Amino acid sequence: MATQTFAQAIAEAERIIRSAPHVQTDQDLAEGLDYLSGSIKASLHLAWAYERDFPYFVASTGPYAKLGLDNPDTLYFHAYIRDDAEYVVSGRRGTTSDLSFQVLNGDYSPARSPDSLAAFDDRDIEIAPDGTYELRFGPAGSGGGPNRFTLGPGSAMLVVREVFSDWEHERPGEIRLHRAGTLGSAPPPRSPEAMAKRFDVAGRILVARLRTFLAFPEWHYLSLPVNTMTEPRPTPGGLATQYSSVGHYDLDDDQVMVITVPAAARSDAPYQGFQLGSMWYVSLDYINHQTSLTADQARIDPDGMIRYVVSERDPGLANWIERTGHRRGYLQFRWQRLARELKPEDGPEVEVLPFDELPRRLPHYERQRVSPGEWAERVAARQIAVARRMLG
Image (tube, rainbow, N blue to C red; front, side, top):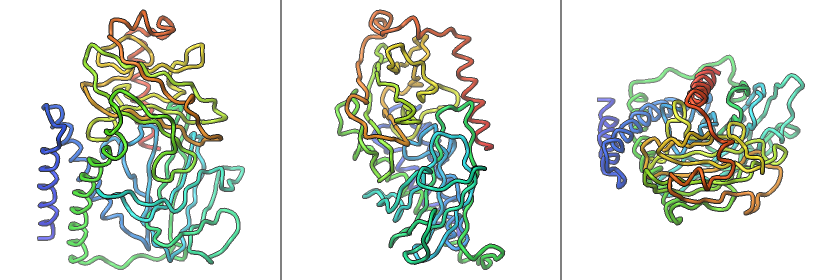
């Protein structure tokens, strides 16, 4: 049967989920099975999108197919390419805070991350007054001039990230891709044998995906002291003009974590965002809960600082980051489209304190207060913004 190896891969994937070391509660397992569901969908999608001669951009992750501590503020797209061909990317720039491009020499695996062969944002391209642009990616010698980029040996994937800071007002752009010289033609018809091979590939993608992103936090997070965050540093993976600060937390329900960070000047970093992630190394529910905040969404104190309050209990504060039942999890800051290097003083300071001490110890506590009605409005705005973005 064509689907036999894929069915076997699903069974193996479920064993991986059920045996994960952090599965301790029914909530842990339920979220793992939900993660498995999204991974199954994504693996089939990716296997069928492997069209290097007739490529198109696919959504790499989203609310219902998460992976790799996905950023709630980002639309991710990718396409498979070959290093001996030329590709044309055209589109229209939206009003989002950042648009970046990256060429990788492969995909993530349990043993290594792919190398970044090129990475840049839209400051490095020429955009017409009406917002339109056309980029060409090809092997060395395929042409020069503006908006042309060389595909180095081993180039295998083109990744695009579009990042929102103001969910309510920023709008996504348009983007499309084709291999040069193929418009107006079509790929050959597929055979049953080719379809069976794709099911097999999808199964291998599924198992590798789960193993990779359960191992990934061991490389970058869990070796750090708990309830701390790193200084800002260039984000691993070769991303241009992006810094991050990471950590992991373990909090009782009567504890809160206060994370204090300077609000970055827009001239330095148009995008600054913070989020929580589950032990499955994916974002928490950012649609129906405030589990992330950008600098535009956060309430900035008079001293220019943003003070996030990570808590299970509702403190009645604008910058409450909801744990949604997750005693343990990951912490992540990102700064993007940077105009300068970040220093330690640009990064976060972390303090854990008893919940009941917040009114006394949180600076500008009264200014941060919100009513239940105001909180409901904040959540409704998130729901509306994501729904609009999904149709963008």
